Length: 453
Ligand SMILES: *Cc1c(COP(=O)(O)O)cnc(C)c1O
Image (cartoon, rainbow, N blue to C red; front, side):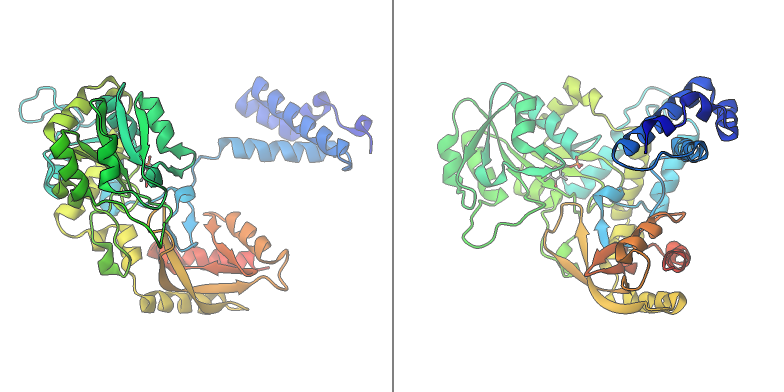
């Protein structure tokens, strides 16, 4: 094992694959990739591996080049049973939403043109009318995501002043997104009240001063505090806010417009309930339980939403035309009262264990071998309904006796085209049909047969 055995950059460049790649992508790019390959080989030789031959370096180079031109993100099949899977792009869109999006992507659109008058229009008008109707709010604004919605809201309403938050709600939402940090970024000062488990309206009241810009309520979407707990309801805070002339800002998180209790789940705060209770601004994501594209929505009073629309950050976080088209189409499913049937995540949530069991049995039949049908739990995921599960059935493949066990099967499933993402439980690969779209079923069966070798 010696570094002297390592092929030089010049030798690797002179191989047939490297020459072919050079034709296609140009000299500089290929030289860069060859250098990376040789450098990687050098590191592994230092760590005790054998020096690769020049052909092995060339193969590495081809693999790198293939990766380079692969599109990203790629379509994958979600067989994990986690419905809103953040790593897998959260909510899949309905057919109508997808068509609306590709329509405006492929051509020009009436994004900021009023087709009646021929004059300049607002990209938000249609969406605002729909959101007003769905939530009962006076005004609405759509932005890039809920994090942006909060940052814009706090910057426009509270910069240079104080915002009162319960100690139990000054939390991390995920991916390093923390309420105290967003408040600091907006220029507002966080005033924490109460304790981690118990906070009363009187705690908020005692902290109100002439410098208070708002009371902020944050839904604890990804964790649950149980036992000896208390937090005031939105209505109670609104009452206090009215008395003291302070608006209530409510981050409800998942944008759930339907009643989750009808689906055997616990209750998730709905934007329309918060509006009805009198919150000044309500914030939510559009790609969680709303079932649409990435986006954030703010609904609330005309006066407060108006301040957000006029703030310079509004332009920086505005929604793009493709998300706008997909979001509008998704919301129209709610207007037409067809959301549970037409929006994929709601079809997944409402699928009966019986129906899923039948799909699992069909898969098992087609897969054969050691595959079994077994009862499992699906989850909603996406930082909503923590700890809640839906009864489901899955095809389960034992890892024992198969090359590299359950991990090996899962890896080979990811290498399929399209990649299939499964979950591993007790050394077994679990494939839950709940999150697999009907048109993806044949591909799952085919991939599993290839991966179980
Ligand atoms: C998910 C979530 C956010 C962040 O929303 P994004 O749309 O992902 O930016 C903020 N607040 C709460 C309560 C959430 O659940």
